[in-house]
Image 1 (spheres, one colour):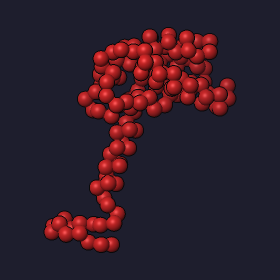
Image 2 (cartoon, helix red, strand yellow; image 1 turned 90 degrees about the vertical axis):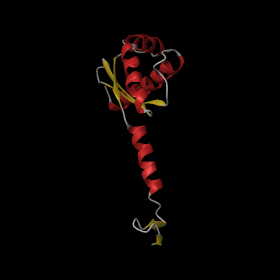
Image 3 (cartoon, one colour; image 1 turned 120 degrees about the vertical axis):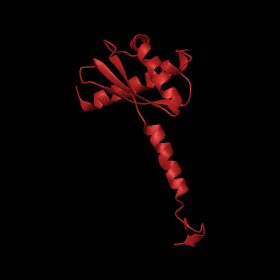
Length: 127
């Protein structure tokens, strides 16, 4: 199977799983700011690794536990939505891309490129 087709199927799996979790699942552990960042489907379409990023640290473990326990339900719903012979077995993995991006944005905001402050005196110096 071509790499292009696998990439298209992976993106469609990501979109469908994101929609299933947002609209169909009503688990109280599925709270906070989260995103299904990507899905990697194997070439034989038997397995799909789903990367989920949760912004809040205290909600990350319960969210992943809820997804792992509902993997069968999500797989069945995915099989109904997509036109493929068999729905892949889902493996949910933690992804820290959103948290890392927020951290980098904070660091860049703290390091204002126009002004540098002297840490001993607190005075600003121009470059």
